[in-house]
Amino acid sequence: AQTVTQSQPEMSVQEAETVTLSCTYDTSESDYYLFWYKQPPSRQMILVIRQEAYKQQNATENRFSVNFQKAAKSFSLKISDSQLGDAAMYFCAYRRLQGAQKLVFGQGTRLTINP
Amino acid sequence: DGGITQSPKYLFRKEGQNVTLSCEQNLNHDAMYWYRQDPGQGLRLIYYSQIVNDFQKGDIAEGYSVSREKKESFPLTVTSAQKNPTAFYLCASSIRGAGASTDTQYFGPGTRLTVL
Figure (cartoon, one colour):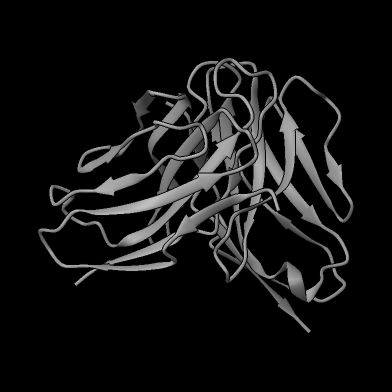
């Protein structure tokens, strides 16, 4: 079974600085998807960024980028120019390419932005 | 507006009662999912449905039931058999559910269920 691990329960960063959230996963499959979701205090899950495992290029979305290391099974999220609105729980998630479409989530990292 | 709606936002239930959580989407998505979130944990899959009139158990289906009579709706019933139902419940949907090459799950705002 696939597992996702986020080893940082909490992180904090100064506003306008850069922060990196870590995620590792375990799978025996070669093709899959990885996601970062943000959960603000409203508790709605919001997609931040998505990476297809067969793509070597790291995904980017504005101030958000990932460092995808397939051999190491690592998928970290970098937030540049942190803003107060970035404060939230961040969840890393894995999904198989085929078959059951369920997402496997990590435990989450609570990110605090210090003004 | 297109999106996923869940109702109610807060729900209180007495022990021994069944309760149904609503999830509706107007995104024309094929697949729908129910997740449970407990404090300090990530989401865990309860049930999912890839097409109308078909659904599969997820990792923690015991004590829950679902139906998928319409593409737009995927209600979740929390039965009295669920031993610890107090949690935050999130519904999600995606554009394709079976062997899709690329689909992303989008989430509703959630329902907070408390058992009194």
